[in-house]
Image 1 (cartoon, rainbow, N blue to C red):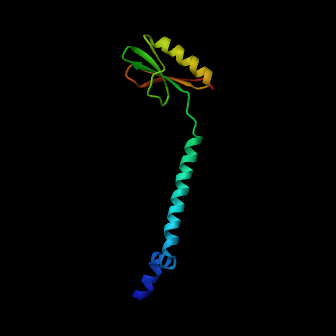
Image 2 (tube, helix red, strand yellow):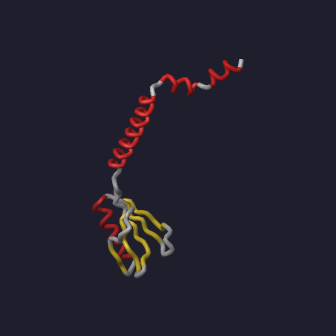
Image 3 (spheres, helix red, strand yellow):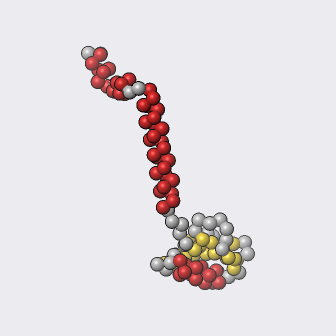
Amino acid sequence: MKNIKNSIFDTTKLSFHTMPKQTKSNFWLDLLSELVDLFFKSSKNRKRTWHQHVVPHEEGWAVRREGNKKITSKHRKQSTALRKAKSLARKHKADVIIHRQDGTIRDRINYD
């Protein structure tokens, strides 16, 4: 009974013993290669958004494109920053995300 149990439940040993060693390593290398290719192909298809954020800044307010660390423009008033963000969003058919002084989101305007 012990031999039957081992042969039924130990299928990994059976499948690996029947494969030559070189085939096992090629299989894993080919699989890894395919996964890496798929990852890089899918990342090329992702489009960057043109959403504009109106965010608090040291000297007042700033407009920043979503995903960017750099600021697009700096303004003393939120209203002027909002005007700039709206013009960029209209041009690129994107959204304007308006933040409060504490950084939380106050409103979102869609220009699709």
